[in-house]
Image (cartoon, rainbow, N blue to C red; front, side):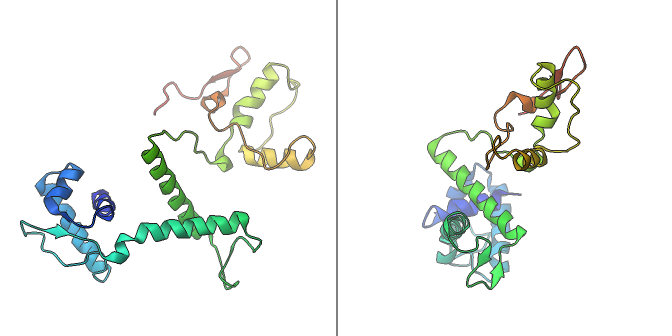
Length: 220
């Protein structure tokens, strides 16, 4: 399913490559490789023949693949767009969500696309530097404070035991209320304990066991 896109990524790294070299690099058989070539040809046709520099026949024995120049530089342009958007959002004095001369707005779909590009760029850097990325989380759905931290704090006497748990589903709402009501105690921007913390794997237990494992087995 994803092999054709991996093949395109490989083609972006070389000027040209034979079909056999491509198959060997992907670790696939000639039969599987032929299916990849058929899919690549479909992508080439659907893009108005804008993917490859020359047409090819999947049944030929000596197929040589070379991307169109515009396709070769596609990822570089995508990265430039993503980084320029980040620069505008965080460092520009202009409205961060306005495009061009105030003609259109960045939509939720636009921001999701930019985030996807940035995650792919992060993945690239991680592979190049041979490091493992740990702790990408979505704070908007984190619930560690409400689910585990507050019950534990009550058990340890940090919070009075008669205090009721906040009737909220996630930490973002909880911290938003706390920081707005107590600005001297909670400085913004804040972050939750949802990154790299033991509380992520725990939930409230009973009177004898204040916290218990959220699951018997944690899948990695």
